[in-house]
Amino acid sequence: MANRDLVTPLIDLNADAHVHTGFSVGRDSVGAIVTAAERVGLRQLTFADIVSPRVNWLPVYQKSILRAQQRTDVDLRMAVEVDVVRADGWLDFPEDLGGLDALSVSVGRLPVGGALLEPRRVAEALRAGELRAVDVVDLAVQASVHAVERASRYAPTQLARPLSLLAQVGLDLDELDDSVFAPLVEACRCSGTAVEVSESWRAPAGRLAGLFAAAGVPLLAASDARDVAQLGQWRFVARLLSSLAMAEAQRAAA
Image 1 (tube, one colour):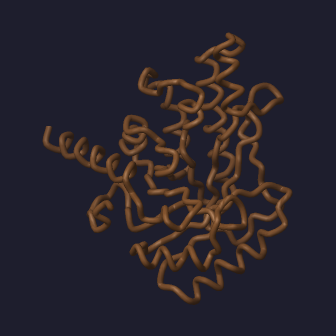
Image 2 (cartoon, rainbow, N blue to C red):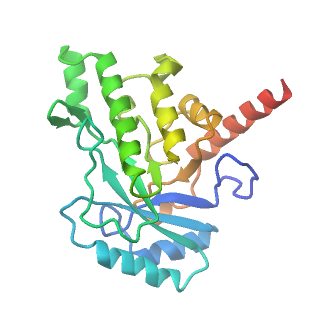
């Protein structure tokens, strides 16, 4: 387990910015998750269940978190995860955003024309020559840019697993120039959007995370846990944190 008392301005390992409950894709209740968070020493926990305009459980979800807050010293934050559904950054918002502490924005499917393509379909299109890699990258970046700009009008925004879709379809982010990522980094900086460093998705990779950090974009440790056993198990996040801290120390010494 990572040293959770590590002092750093980059990523707080005592806070988990993205967990799921049984209301959506998780296995456990709000109460069980809070108990597990207490056990592993978390000080802050953000619930970010996946929503759409079709869900009807949001009021009960919110009440469950508020009740749990009365019984714990862990700071509980109430968020939802919303997916990008159009190239212009339109989001699958629920009907009511009231009472939320944050919006977690994800690009899990690629908006192409009027369609949303699953990662497997994008990979197939790339192999068949139906899509070009440069266009896939541009679509993913621009959809993310528009999404954080749109979401930040309504609530404090977190970008979940940034550009992980590209790795899912077989594209290597290390082969891309920093200028490709610049619009997204700038959009996050200007909109006050924080970036989730996802343990489950292992994203963003170190280089992209470094660009966000260098621009002053806040980085948040996010387990994306669907099971209480995943709480506090920082491996990818801790390694990325160490590499960022080392790079920062080298810059300071130069």
